[in-house]
Image (cartoon, rainbow, N blue to C red; front, side, top):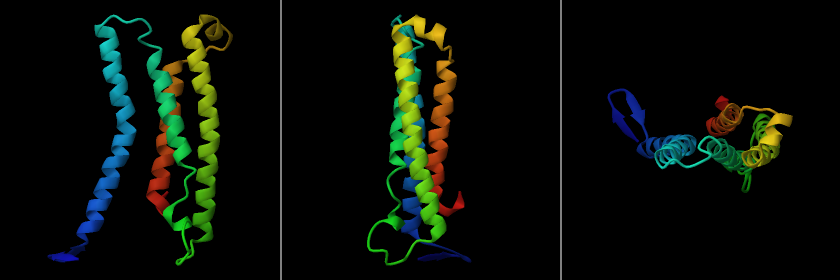
Length: 154
């Protein structure tokens, strides 16, 4: 512990929180950044299908974020030296279930986007807006992961 004036802080905690925050920002921003780079390259090189690839990639990264929700919190694993509260257990189970359900929904959305990128007939039968749905799903995935990361504050 270090004292500066009246405020006390633990340097290791600040570093860990800083690293966790940076890691969460990278997890959230990296798919968007990579998608923007790929879009710019596809437009610059005049590649076909410049609008079809990004929603598919975004949904795929969101599915992996939702699968990660099923991993138990550190407080739920181990020898239970400090027994987690019933509220924490219930919240963890809810997030894990939402993650699994979200992954299944994302898998269906990914299949739809993949099929529509090959065939326009599917878009006529079930018209969706791929970028809007994939961004909504991605936002849902990020919100759930932030909720898990914040612990009891969510």
